[in-house]
Image (cartoon, rainbow, N blue to C red; front, side, top):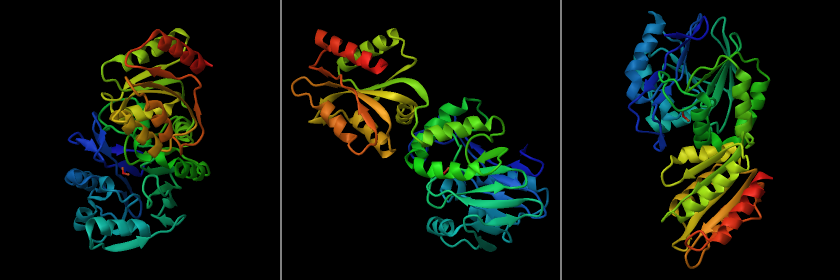
Length: 385
Ligand code: FEO
C-alpha cells in the first residue's frame, strides 16, 4: 500500500491486459487506474477502477480500511475506467454515501442504471466536505476530459486530486519517462480542450499544491512547476521544443526520398531536432504528439483518388480535431499526372487558427527531380529562418 501522506494511501491497480485504451490508444506499458483513500474521522475513497480490476481494487480498499468502513465514495469523473466498479463498491459498503455532482449522477445512471446508493451527496462547484481534520474542496473542471469532471483539493494536506489531468499512459510498475507518455495521452485525450485546461490551471494557481494525485500515471510530488509548466505549454498550444517534424506518406518511395533529402539538409544546417514520421507505420497518437510538440511541421504526401493519401488525411483530421494552431507548415506534394495534394492539405486547415504557411513548396511529378532538390533547399532555408 503506497502512502502518499500520513492519511492518504494509493489503492489503484495496474492493467497489463489492455489492448487499446479507450478503444484506440496503443499502451505497450499498460495502464494504471488510480484510486485513493483518505483516513480521518470519516473515510473517503476517491474514484473506482476499470471493471476488470474491481476485485483487486476492493481487496486493496479492504486492506487499507483495516476493518473500518468507508463513509464516502467521491466520483470525480464518470468515464467507465473510473466509475465501472461503483456498483460493486455499493454492494460491499451499502451504507457509504456517494459524493458527486449532478452531471456525474446523471451519467452514472445512463451507464449503469439505478444503483442502490446508501446515500447521495450532490455537490456544487466550490463546495467543501469535512472528514474531520481533512477538508475537501470540489473544483469543477468541465471538459477535462468530460463535462462532469471535477477535481478535489485536500486543503489540509495540500493535495490536488486532479482527475484525468496530469495523467499518462503506462502502468505504475513500469519505469518510463513521464513527459513522453503524458504528452501522447494529453494530446490524444484532452488536447482539444486547451481552453478548459487553461481554466483549470488558473483555478489551481490559487491553491498551494504539494502533491498531485491523477487518475492515471504516477503521483507527482516533486518539481511540480515542471509538470504545471508543461501543462501550460500544451494547453495554450505553445511550442514545447525547437525543431521540425516531417510527416509523410509514400507509395513507391519517391516522397520518402524527398523527405529524407529535406531532413538531411535541415540537420546539415543545424536544425536542433528533425523528427521524420512515416504515417503509415508510426503510431498515430505518437505522430499527433510530435506535431504539437514542435513549432514547424512539413507534410508530404501523394495525390490519391483525387484527394490525398488516406494516412495523411487521417493525420490532418486528428490535428484539426484537436485544435492544432500557432504553427508553421510547409507542404510537399507528389502526383504523377495531376498533383493536387498541397491544395487539398491546405484546405483541411482552413479553420485552424494562426497557421503560417511556408512560401517555398515542393511539387514532385512522380520522382524527385533536380528542380525538386532546389525547392527542398529553399524549404530547408526557410524552415531555418
Ligand atoms: Fe481516465 Fe477520461 O477517463
